[in-house]
Image 1 (cartoon, one colour):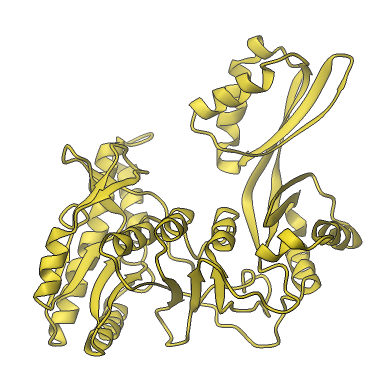
Image 2 (image 1 turned 120 degrees about the vertical axis):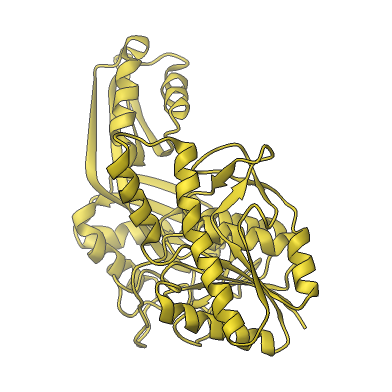
Length: 418
């Protein structure tokens, strides 16, 4: 007997028939002799519908506490219905909200982080041979306030819970049957990976791959959680995420990710004196604006230019923040560009293989792609390019690094929201 955590996203339980299909899959797993703890997201578009409803009631940004109260109800619907579906198949089941399951978070609404898990009730239910169903995406502060975990919250719930109860395996069920070398909707002959390392998956997740959320991968890496990503619509084998993945012969790059939500901001004519960059990025950090790539040019006549990238959704706030400190910085001008994407190659094999970056730059130049910004780490290289050239760039790089396969891949519907 093994203890398994199974997470199902919103598209997997999007209607009554899908809910029944998931229940059957869980019951089959239990009857194989396993103990099962299930984490579920809100059904289908429930969360978006609740957000739209709040906009009809409240003008402007709604109160964060009340939004958490509202959005947490979506998962409660899912867990109760799934429990009923499992019980209708003759197996005992019990559903819990995030706070009932002992999920303790920091006192932040909308994007809380888990600080502790006290799964006493879950253990007691497992001792009764029940299937335990936990609402993902939510928790409770030490003071009893309901919180939500933000995007990817149910993935994070599942992996953190697997670590807390020392599960033998955590399975993330989604609408694709594993992790691919790139988005199959962009490259039709993308390859499904048999396995991938935590570090490679974390880079891909941070760089735009939507199958797993970065926080969930961090938990898996920190607590060495055995993690598998697989489809809820097929019985195909999924992709294992582990400490070290076996290197394929001749494959240096494991995958290609891209992010369409990119803007570049350039601050021109900045007096070259100590503390200027600190003032800019401290001000941006105070506004919770994440900065990605930073590039500074040389100094001419005592003035320097530098550029950095932010999420497109943060561009206007970033520009306003920079405008607010113009008197302190004394720059000449600020410009911004929005029709950009970041394309990244990721692979642990890059550490010991020279020429990987040169090949990327050469392949992009052959198809007339200009590179606006570059960022590197030990296992990734990212380039910011014109958004209109994204598809061609991904396809060319995918072939250049030997990632193509002739097999037709399965592509489901839109990615689960959380």
